[in-house]
Amino acid sequence: MSTVMILPEIDSAKAEAFAGRFVTALNNGALCLMASIGHRTGLFDILSTLPPSTSEEIASRARLNERYVREWLGAMVAAGVVEVDPITMRFVLPAEHAAYLTRAAAADNMAVFAQYIGLLGGVEDDIVECFKKGGGVPYTRYPRFHAVMEEDSGQSVLSSLESHVLPLVPGLTERLATGIRVLDVGCGRGRIMNRLAELFPASVFLGVDLSEEAIEHARAEALRKGLRNISFTVKDLSDFDRTAEVERFDFITTFDAVHDQAPRHPPGAGPRRRLPDAGHQGFELRSQQRRPPHRDAALHDLLHALHVGVSGAGRRGSRRDVGRRKDARIPPAGRFPFGGDASTGS
Image 1 (spheres, rainbow, N blue to C red):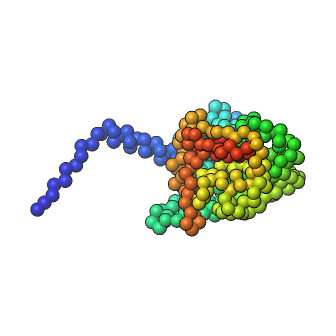
Image 2: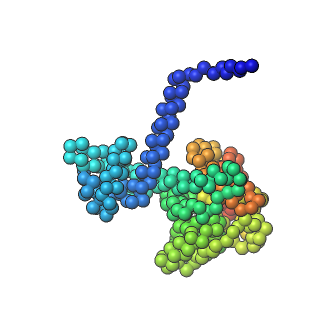
Image 3: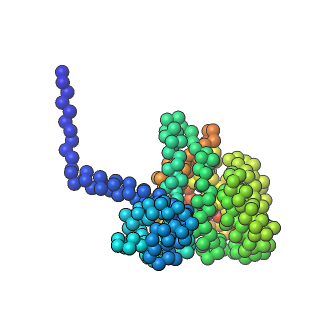
């Protein structure tokens, strides 16, 4: 007995639209990789300072191999990022584009974020194995993560630290100036804590992170700056909710770290144990009302946050939107709890 398969009717317009969108996605993925290279090699920065120039002139100025620079310029022209005179073969980065691709653009430099595509793509084989066997991917498999995260935080948090972040907690700036004890959980390379230690020499700061590479970098930076009121330590805080010393710190922060945690108890339990009751008013965050959902959430969850969160035995990953959901609440315990993931949208 034969079976006749009836194929569904296909909406050709819908199919073509999807194919077109996917081709665009492939092209944009390649563009992000090329943009990351442009950022890391300094080519965007060099181009922004040059008049229309040949590939030889650009390579010489950047001290890079001309053959590779020429190919990269071709990709940038094809993507509409760089412009070229087809007769003189001189390339130029329009000022309107440089405003979003160079280090001079500061917080507007989107080339920084293009680095995540190559970084996350580098663990594809590991993640395919996780689909088959479960488990996670440890931080050690993301060799440039802390370097890229340092740049990211420098734009998203550090650039607004004094003007927007600190004022979120009433009276905090004054207390820091007077002198309090501060802990940063998941400090990474310590850029934010080192900045706070510079701004508030009367306060004492401690940064904690799981990564030895990140802590070594943070310590070196503090030493270079001559800071004496800050220290950094390597520590796994997976049991922080039970082992945290009670009321040791006055102010505890976490920036770009909550969504990577794999707690057995709600994030923040450990930090709250370390905060003294001071009788001050607590505060409530409604960040989802102020900000749209992050469009990169699914990408980041699957390729990073989930895996580093479950890379330890028996752990579960935290949702990336912890602290972002509507009515995310900081318990009013008369303390200075503050989570960068919730308050700053970082």
